[in-house]
Image (tube, rainbow, N blue to C red; front, side):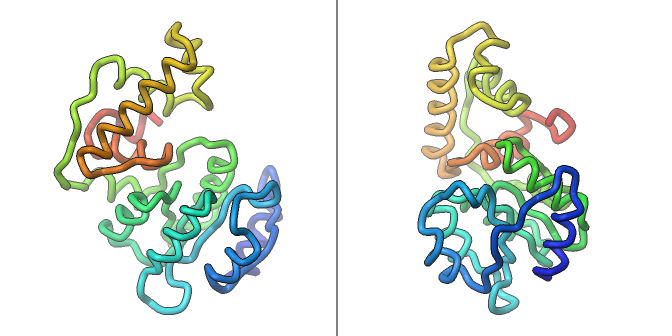
Length: 204
């Protein structure tokens, strides 16, 4: 699988440089215990050593500060949602093919949300409780942030200071955490917003 992904990445536009391949989370973290300039995003096979999802490996790599795209044969909605809850930026099922994986990698490198087909289906069908109440301004800031590259652009678009944008987003995250649905990353917030009907997949 590593050789196939490396070939896809080298042929991408723009090309994606594969820094290294690892057979376990331990091996990766031994060399990358914290984010470094040579690793923009980690593509993690969720079935590292067995057919059981390696949620612990995902959690450890995310907790070390890395951006992670999960790439797996597993297409079960509960597994996809669990990975997003643990901080994965995106979840791709291997059958979704080359184009979606490359798009997800390019998006992750630019801090842009990417939602693949199976991930979209899992988010839309999520019926878990715990939707917090967001104010109108919080919702406006949240949606604008999903559709732009950074908080400074959101501030200019909405005619507010970037610090105010950050305050609103911090408040939204606090509300989701209090509701038992933490959203530490932009991708996790996108997932929450889609699940709660704040934004649709087509708006991204």
